Image 1 (cartoon, rainbow, N blue to C red):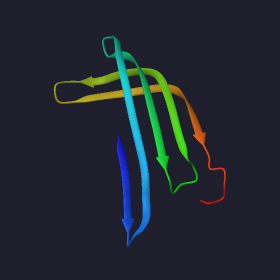
Image 2 (cartoon, one colour; image 1 turned 120 degrees about the vertical axis):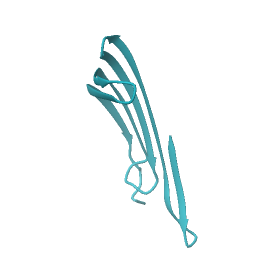
Image 3 (cartoon, rainbow, N blue to C red; image 1 turned 60 degrees about the vertical axis):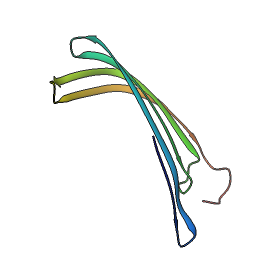
Length: 88
């Protein structure tokens, strides 16, 4: 999770938040299933709120004690809430 809030010379110039969550279920050796969620808010972009939900297959191509390289392929759904006025 991340939240950025900044003022410069008393003027607000950043107010945004980002949340990412992911879960993977290993089904076979190196092959599994993933689900991911992303929620984003940014007061200074032309969007009030964006939420995405994704799912698909995952493959751990390299898995050692020091290194994990995973490829993911899937699909998702994104919902956006746009501002109702022209203030941005």
